[in-house]
Image (tube, rainbow, N blue to C red):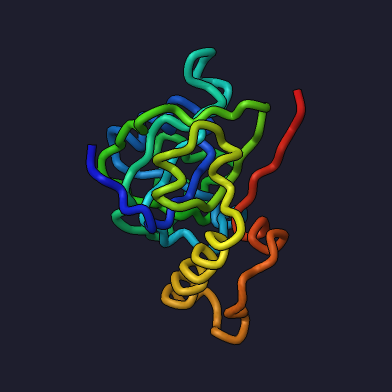
Length: 185
């Protein structure tokens, strides 16, 4: 297992199916619809939150992560050529190119059922967390995360400097960039 830098920017991403896991593992990419993408996709690593289809032993948890090697914009139809008639085949998607998938030292469990679309965290938090709630960036770490997100957004040309404040950001605004939604049940 390669070492992940404690200050690495990590995007936890929803993995809806075993097929998507196999695409990431074998083909080395993950897709994010442009219309629902977080504002910053230029991250160091993706970590994968596994949904219900992963079965009793592997669902509702994060077990793997991968380094991000690049990001490009394409269409769903170009990514999944075996589905040319899919209703979203012409929609734009980010193709996040990945390095090899790595296993976490221990799975990160969603103790209460949670649906995660996207959540930003750090390499340090990813490596030490045992539950999804421990990935949430708090207090002084929030300022470091915001500065990193701001820098990446500006570098990618997604925003102008005057659109992004330099001060620590309110948690509600961070939730707009990538969020954690709790559901009971």
